[in-house]
Length: 165
Image (cartoon, rainbow, N blue to C red):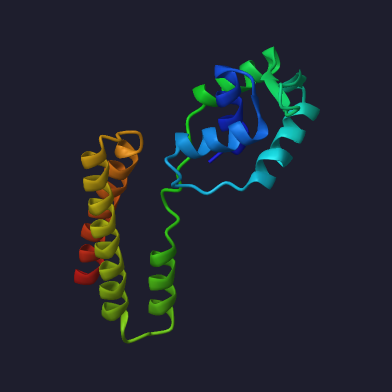
């Protein structure tokens, strides 16, 4: 997740001060990804240093406002157009499984079942979250939850394959 680019996107909408950017970020991600105020201001300093944002001055309450520059818009567009890398062949559980095999660990089936139970708990949690979103009419993060559920379903099937091996 890129705090830098999320702040640029929020500033693309309109000029904002630091606290508005923090609350705008929280609204954007439905407070699912924590962001502390210090990180916002550190990022703003770097964005300003790199000429991606500038300050036209302060608002009526003497809070420093920020606006996105043309260079900032170009940076935001470039980021939006760039595909996201995924780690396809790096899985922490499978690494543990390989190590267990290497040392002739006898309880590999228990490892698999414990991992599967953790994933099932995650499925239940996400399903509850999805139901809450449906009841509240909040669809902002619904697609992320749907994707996570699909990934978990695939991972559970994959664990079943490993268990049969």
